[in-house]
Image (cartoon, rainbow, N blue to C red; front, side):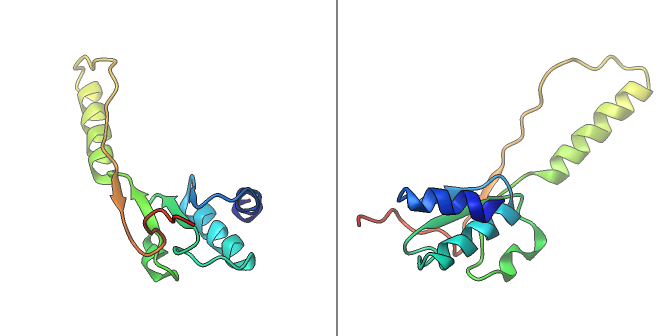
Length: 111
């Protein structure tokens, strides 16, 4: 899980961990604390998804927020077009995520 992977990274001396999900990031925070590191002063941690409870963690988790509303709207629009018989182009839709900076990240340390 997140704790085991983070422990291996911390043993190598990393000062920043970017995780594939918010729960994995919380595991990384736990692993850092167990090794005596302070988040964010010794190691920065970033999650992904901006889960609802991330503002309630200590420290509040910096995370990447997906534009879920825009993605859902686009999916509904494409589906409605297909239902109406409109030809839908086979192209990719790109959505821009947002970095939500909270308390689990700091400037790079010069240690």
